[in-house]
Length: 274
Length: 338
Image (cartoon, rainbow over all chains, first blue to last red):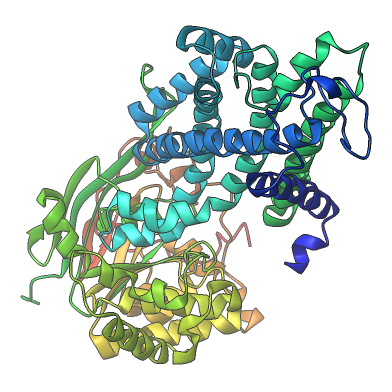
């Protein structure tokens, strides 16, 4: 652990991300106000003691909404990374040990998916399936499959070349057991690093989709959604856009730094490549 | 010797495709192993020597069926192992094991020594109680000169020589009859090399193990093995018991290899010669005898016809036209490269 804390990226990233997670956890049991309760008398206020981050056009408390928005962002990050990890890692492992046609098929499919502009396709998917948070997560998650499939295949192939794999094969241990027992444990670090970074990307992507009205639907609080709603009232109350924007920047920066820090400490070889 | 060999290899060949993909045909073939035959008796230490790239490692992997040969036969204890199905092969694998060159890459860094050493026991469906496995592992570690308390450690906590001992313990775990040792000491310091070689020798005698000992170091092989085969560009060029080997090498390549073994007495070096040039590419091997471009005795015939491996004396086979009835040319007067 001391090794991690010596890394500035990790320490700062950890602090920023921990704050986001803490905020989300707290919001589950307590928020200053009900984030969805409207109050016509306190519309479009700036920061004050009663409403530290001000209120929106319906008089809803911005702090409460930013807090519940954190839950939303974390769920999106977790679900999308989980989709990418389970399917992508599975495909990558399969491609690495089967090789040949399977490998080609998985990799060309990944290329195909990579070939589409991610945001445009996410918009396409959500407009076909209908705008909702679940569909937004699905759209982002699908784009994570090739990311993890490629990474997994690349690092797993390196592991397959190791002699301890040959030793296991010489003992008559099957390919699947080798994958489970030797390959997977040895590729966890790069997957963890990539997972953290994709988590940050997912938060940003969901904010983008919600901003376009394709993600989280009102009245649920989402940082992207809040930005969208703030747009109309920019001149009346600029704070309305600043705080959700700051929250997005904070969270994305935090998880990115965390990923960088993890990479620096877990995989020193990758640092030299930069 | 009427006793049936433990391992018999007949005309074994492996060609690797070069270039090509799923749609393209390979542009060339690397003939890593081009027809090799030999036999190893029970408890015999058989050495396979040659420069890097001569196919000796590939032979080792083929023997264990870690690679599928292009052609040839491999018989283990009378069974044609290439005809075995997955399950039968799995059972047979317990009777033959491998020791690797690189003590760093051959142990999984995420496993404890106990997990590494007992891994062969977990294959093949047989489930022995954990306590029993641990006990076996502890006994094995002591056998290879480590302590039972090392079981809980990870590979990075050991030196190269100790790691190689762990690899040996893993190979011994299933009580095999044959061990393919692929350059087991060439990554180690010289002092540690001697320890590991003596360990292999002791264990071999204790368990009646047969070894296929692969090395580029003729000195090591001469010390450990009873019979030696010299490989050059995918083929065996000379095969003889170790005593005959150093006294009367019949192939010019063997002679050159022997000349490359360092001797303690520098005066004895005179009259020996060094080989020139590099090993030709196995993609496009020279016509005739593969060694002729580097051979100081090369005849016209060597450039055209490939010499077969023929019995030159009792138990001594050689593939060289110079041995067509007579021995090598008398040495001396030709030591140009010395």
